Amino acid sequence: MEDVKKVKVLKDGPYQVTGAVCLDELKYITNHRGFALEYEKVQQYPGKESYCLCRCGLSQKKPYCDGAHINGFDGTETASHKTYDEMAKFIPGKQMDLLDAEDLCAVARFCDTKSGTWNLVGTAENPEAVDIVRHHCTYCPSGRLTMVTKEGNRIEPYLLKEISLLVDPLAPEKGPLWVKGGIEIEDADGTCYPVRNRVTLCCCGKSKNKPFCDATHMGDDE
Image 1 (cartoon, rainbow, N blue to C red):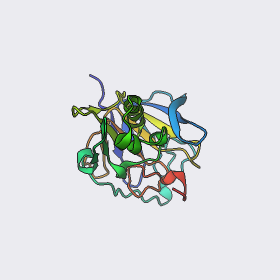
Image 2: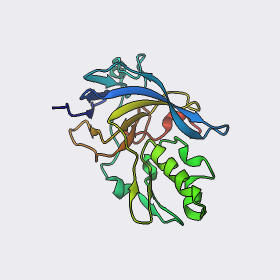
Image 3: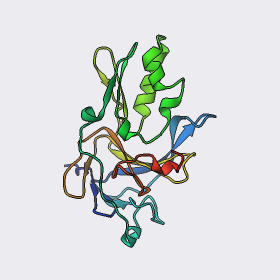
Image 4: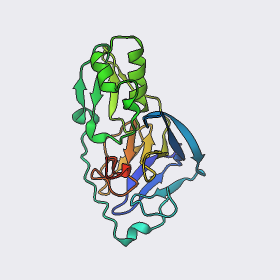
């Protein structure tokens, strides 16, 4: 029987990953304006049955933990355990609708191309707009955005149960961690967050929505 893939948030410590979850590093491919278009694999890390990933941002062996958190990292979790439906705002559109859970945003910027997701949803009537919004939403790593067809079908990407360290060319440090495919995430007290197809976890140690990314890794200007 296949091991259950799981991420456990350790109190004031790292993420403990079990179940032989594949780990790689992906880089955003951006256009001339810095908006994200695609992902490019940078490297594949060796397969392990279990491992710990840095959460404090201080490890010298990133993405792995090296124990740097023992110097006083406050990893107190502040994120809610609300479901996506409880967080998301429904935005009706011309050809498609949109679910938007703004609190989950990791500022990946896929949604900024081609005049922007919200503009396309609200005003565009050309057939290409549906495909553009679909791309915006399915490439959104945090799962903030979900396209909904006029028939009420939610469009979610098929994602294997893997973790990717994301590299943004505009960010001063690597991150967040992209947890894919519905991997269970358990908080430090033993309660599981609602399982979602894609989430982004903070690995700079500075998020105000721990354990989830709030784009603080982008720097003071974000």
